[in-house]
Length: 130
Image (cartoon, rainbow, N blue to C red; front, side, top):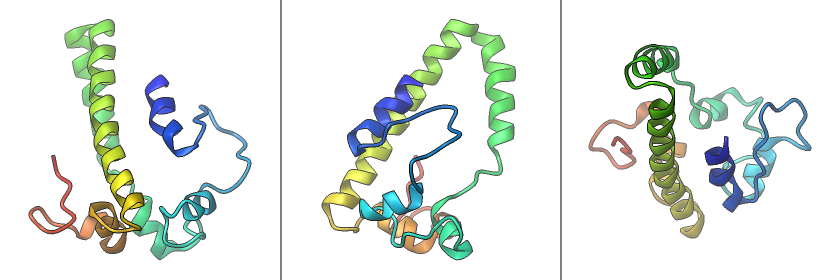
């Protein structure tokens, strides 16, 4: 959880888990910050599909990571590997968000928001594959 807290802190977001009550709508806050193109992403199906992606493979990832790698490496090393993974991905995402904010809504993240992640193909502008 510390990595999540560190990820959100530079943007003025305090990470809580589990979250049962929020002081306001996150889509409104992210719009005010200039990250979301409109404030009503939660209930606008088209806007939501572009911004709040859902990974259909998350169950497979969780099963493989916990069911296989945790058994392979043990609890402590699995935790270290997971923390390193998140630190690397969060640093990459920070770069995308910072570029977006400093360039007034332009850059790779803008392309992903405008085109929807599912529409960006490898090699196209907006490709963020690693």
